Image (cartoon, rainbow, N blue to C red; front, side, top):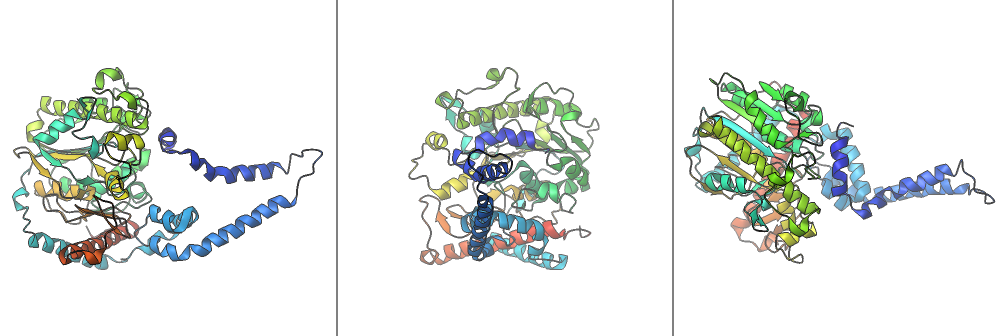
Length: 529
C-alpha cells in the first residue's frame, strides 16, 4: 500500500465512466452472497441462482480461453505488451498473460548464459556501427568534450514535447525551458522507453536497458548487476549525488539506490524546509533551492548529480504551493479546471522552478563548468484528450492513431555542454541513449549499453512493448504506419532501401529487447562487470 496516496490521487484523471462496468461482477456476487443471509418475504430465495451463475462463469472462462491460445503467442514472448494482450486476447487474455508472465518470467528470456548474451550484444553493436559508417556519421568530435566537468541530470515529471515553444493566451508555457533549449542542444525527438512510470524512466537512464512492460524493473530487479551510469562516473573519480523530494520507500528507491555507487542520497526527510508539499512530494522549488546547500564541501572532485523533480505529477493540482498564482505565468482560460488546464499549469510551475535551478547553478558558480541534461520522464496528457487535440489545432478526424501513439512517448529534452553552440538533434532517440551520450562527452568507458550516443544515433527507437519510431514511420509491433497520414504501409510497395531499413529496425528491436529481458530476468551481467 506504499503507493496508495499517489494512485488514489491519479484515479479521477484516468478513470472513465464506462470502466465502472468492469466491477459489475463484484456487485452481482455481493448480492448473491447476501441472499444467503437476507430473506425477502414472502418470496423464498432462488437456491439455484448462485450455482447457475457460477456455472455460467466457468463456461464463459473456458470459451474465452479457447480463443486465447493463438493470440497468446503474440504477447507471451520477451516483448511483453499489455496493449497487444488486450487487443488480441481480450481483457481476460490480458489477465491470463499477466499471471503467466509473473510466474514464468525467467523462462521467456531468449539468452540463458552470459556468453550467449555477449555474442548477441556484440553482433548488434557491429550492425549499428556498420550503419553509422555507411551513413558517414562520425561523432568522434564529441568524445571527451566535457571531460572533468560536473554533470547535472534533471528529470522533469510528465513534461512532454508538445508544450515546448507553445503559448497559452499569448504567454509561453515553458519560457525557461524554451530559452535553455534555444541557447543549447535541443533534442527534439526524444522518446520514453516505455509507456509507464517515473521509475521506468530512471531505470532506462541509469542502466541503458529497457524496463519490463509491467513497470517493475526498477524496484523488482534492483539487486541485479548493471553497467550503470553511477558506476562509470565513480570510476572516473566523480562524487555521485541522487536527490528526489519523495519518501525513500516509494518505488523501493532506498534499496535501489543503495545498490548503486552513490555517495550522497537525499529524500524528503533529508531536507530542512518541507513547508511546500504536493501530496507527499517536496515542491520543485524547495528541492532546487536546498540541494546546493547539501552538496559536498570538498569541491576538488567533479559532481555527477541525478535530480528527480515531481511537482508536475498527476493529478496536476499543485496543492500545497504557496502563492501559486504569483509563480504561474499563464492563464489557461477556458481550460481552467480541466485535465488539460491543470496539466499546463503544473508544467508552467515546473518550468518556473527549473528557472530557479539554473539561477542557483549560476549563483553558486557551477554553470560555466557543468553539463546540464534535462528531460521529461514520460507522458502527462493522454493524446486522446479532446481539449488537447483542440489546443494543438488538430482536426480530430485527421489526427491519426499512429501520431497519437508517437506523441504519447514524445518528451521534452535538451542538453548544455559549456562551449558548444546551439544545435538541433531531430533524429529519434530514447532514454536508453542518455547514458552512452553522457559517457561519450565525459570520455568514459561504456561497457554495456543498449542505447547509442545521441551524436551517433541508430535510425530508430523502440518502446519496450515492441513499438518502433522512425522519422516518418511508426510500428505498432505488427504493422508500419505513415506518421503523417496514419495509413498502413504496404512494405512491398516501398523502395528497396526504405524496406530494408524498416526490416532492420524490426530485427534490431527484437535483438535489443531480447538482450534487455535476459539481463533483467536472468541477471546475466552478474560477476561479469
